[in-house]
Image 1 (cartoon, rainbow, N blue to C red):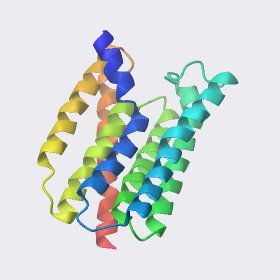
Image 2: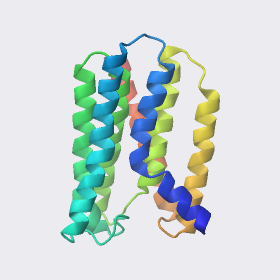
Image 3: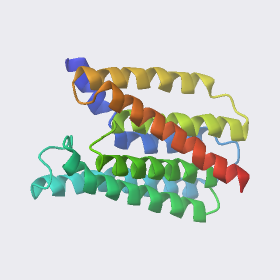
Length: 202
């Protein structure tokens, strides 16, 4: 049980956008000036990591949520729409830079997944944000490797295995049901493929 709690906490959903950004810059074959890279990483870190943590602390302080796990469907609604907005803003900012268009798609994909999860809340159906976060990253890495014709098979395989471990721990902790972990994973990975398909066609 302690191992499951560690995995669930260590691989928090807010970690995966910045992990995706690091992998992107590590393997991106086209050169980018380091100051630009550091600026982009800083924007992503503040927008998708630091700000959400501060925001959740504020919500907890004012008792708008009972715990940082945001268990209930009603508690999830406002944070979900906020994270949707953050993902959209970060993605739009990156896309407008014309430097890291493909990385911007990661956040647009997350935007779609968050929006779908928000709509599902009104049907009393939540999804696992843990498997959603890693599913989105896997989808991004697949088309990232395809687009630049680089071999990321070992990294993608690692994250597939990790997604199974995370899903198992969420079920073991009774934080999510089997349906919720599957919905989270597949909604996110399909959202990534969908947004890449639009980008590829345009």
